[in-house]
Length: 106
Image 1 (cartoon, rainbow, N blue to C red):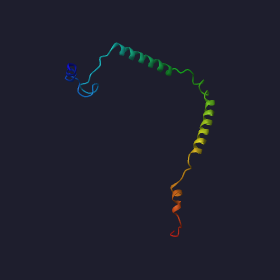
Image 2: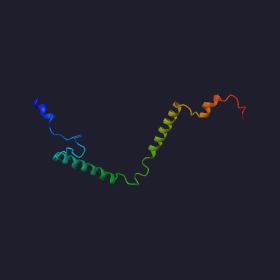
Image 3: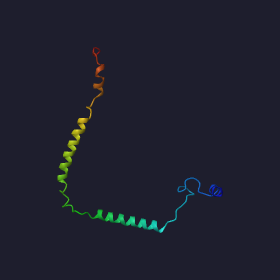
Image 4: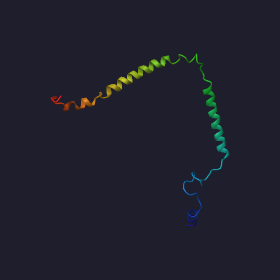
């Protein structure tokens, strides 16, 4: 009973705990600082690799020609497969063509 009374009448932040004017701000710990430092170092290593590519422009000029042939073949095969499965295109005129009995009024 005493714990319930303590918890009911304790002073807390109104509304959402971590948003707003009267929010609770977590103190910065050493562990959080170390994690953030490691994350920044990892991002810097990735950016270094992106700035200095493995291949030069001359080396990378024709290395993917063979891959494009394979991609075109696969794209052609998938296009044929999907077109075969799809229903043919139908226009509104074809749909309403049954309503034309005779055109004597023209």
